[in-house]
Length: 520
Ligand code: FAD
Ligand code: NAP
Image 1 (cartoon, rainbow, N blue to C red):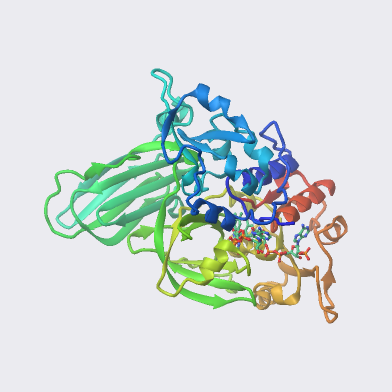
Image 2: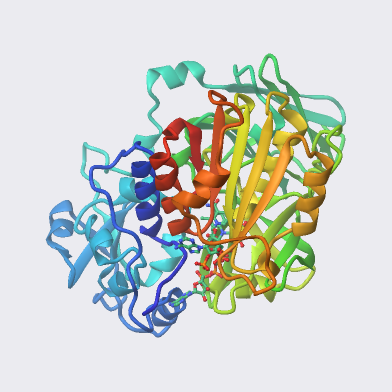
């Protein structure tokens, strides 16, 4: 039996849904089942091969048609299934058997507009590329009512959001262009400002809770690649300073691009990617490597603690996207210094699977090659840590990655924390990531930090703890330092590990506010 362990199209819906449910935050009426076994020959790579085979996957011999709602609704069976995403209609019948979440999940949107369902789950999934050969055509737009899921509808702001809407202005000197964005948000900081300035194109995205403000223009004249970002945190003013290439007076900032001056929900904004250069690749364990990527010169991007990015790469002619959680280059042992961000490099700790589609491609990248990196995503809030007295981190395998920045943040910047404990589950000793560094950290900060390694497939020599995540192991290691201390438990690892862990923690009496599960 084959299982695809990663997510694409609706697969993540099941994961998110299960976790939300376990955490008592069920937002959808139906709780989906976890991944289903796929038949042999139905992996993502097999799907890519089929899409390249020249087979007519839509049954329309390459013709694109206009689809009415009535027509769409007729194609609602497994053997004839059309789905609309963002105004485009796909015949997903041939994809059914390749969907890791199973046919039933895909059938939830059969014959309807699946945009909302899709967006709730994985708006980052590159369905345009994955389902290119399944494209039937566009929805026929009704004369009055806008089509559900089409852009203009999403841009209509609730009046409360309008009141909060940022604005921008710009001014110039002989050599500089300064763009000033008034966010009206008091706790503005550099993590919330993402700037990309390349080839006369300027894109500034400001993240404000679940909304995003965008300044996006084709600049009037050329600028150099040096971009400075100044933030007046207290008043929420953001300045982007560009250097003119020629000292001439600009008549205008530039031509607005499609998303310019919009303030919309983050989930309605497409993910933006920039090409980053691979500068080094170093071994962490027998199968895991630390990839160092360099951001382009005109980019200002910081990935906040607990958030991930998406890497996009073309594999066999199809764009494939996978999430990864940036780490630090090493675990800093000096707690006096704030964490160092050089603002230029991104470090990713990635396990290379011998049959993994994406990680095999990553492993074949040469130094100097480029890969596309998205803006950060994720719902972890540092304030969850800042109000805790005990921080307990449960990691399984590369589920350690979000814990790296979290650990550093907790130990360097959160003074109210009394204890920080990492319980790290791996198969064998050889699989433990940064074991030495973790042990050194535990020695350095004995009074606050403790690490416990637990192996599921230890060798005979292993004298430490063994087992898999279980109620008894958790009750042994997950404890409050005082009877009433405020605790935060973060968990990340293989999906079943995380799901079971959350359930066991709840059974042990921890509340949903005390648990954060990292998922996509
Ligand atoms: P896949 O091709 O999806 O395969 C994964 C495994 O399944 C492999 O063992 C493969 O051999 C097996 N497999 C695939 N297809 C089949 C099949 N048909 N039958 C049987 N077995 C099959 N990973 C990291 O290493 N570091 C990170 O920092 C990181 N961060 C993440 C953050 C988030 C939010 C999420 C959701 C995941 C993260 N991951 C991380 C996991 C990452 O996104 C990928 O899932 C992972 O790299 C595997 O991708 P792949 O395409 O190489 O593997
Ligand atoms: P792994 O080495 O296969 O497993 C790590 C540990 O978890 C092992 O002890 C393993 O035990 C145990 N485990 C695996 N499946 C389990 C299950 N069903 N129930 C209980 N324990 C289980 O892990 P990996 O290959 O590094 O994979 C890490 C996972 O973390 C990936 O799925 C990745 O997508 C996810 N991840 C998520 C994020 C995020 O932010 N959401 C970030 C990084 C990584 P046995 O195998 O011996 O049973």
